[in-house]
Length: 270
Image (cartoon, rainbow, N blue to C red; front, side, top):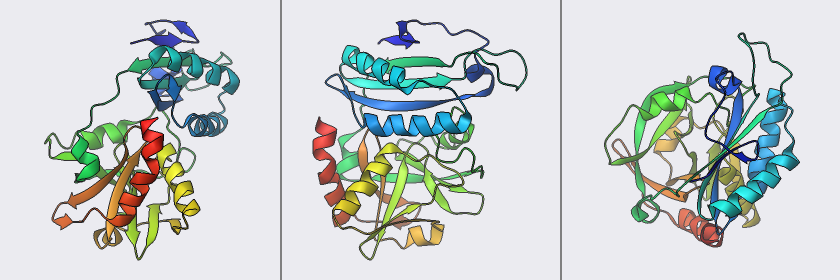
């Protein structure tokens, strides 16, 4: 599988890179099919938002051109783009060095087909997400909360974990966004204080509204999740997984979940 640094084949990273020292950067995980990057515009928009907030002087035109070339070379799989602030000296103060662009290719994950057709069981994670509005929504390199949450289970029965914030509000899965259905309305957690604003989440919100399905983004208490009519997860690599169980709670795979899955079929197959 190919790997590039700043547009050139490479396999080594300088030890003084601030991404390694401080997690000072961002990343995007992009599905590639037939030499094309899926949802590229949404990935680039999130990257632009993140680089602006972190004050990383990133040339998005260069990033896009590299992604197009890398996807063509990769063919099918996953392109992971990492942007760091580049080299730095000891200490938190940022230098004026140019940012570093890292691209890594890997095979597409082989998720069981039953996850999408029959639904998945969630593990109730004890790890809580801290509130930090300056970083909320971004896919930044500081992912220790997710590492801790994922370490809580090893059983194959759980395909994902449910993560809440410090106040017990549902936020997301460890690597997925979450939606519930109540009275024909689609609800998804507010991510203005913590969590990752996924590109598939944005795609589904837009598609649902175009289909005249009401969508509300707000705080979601755990009690409201437990009385939902349908629950599903989404991610840019797998699309939609219905949720069928969390602890003692059970849900059917609902009609609205199936409708949204069908709407993604052409996107996921392309």
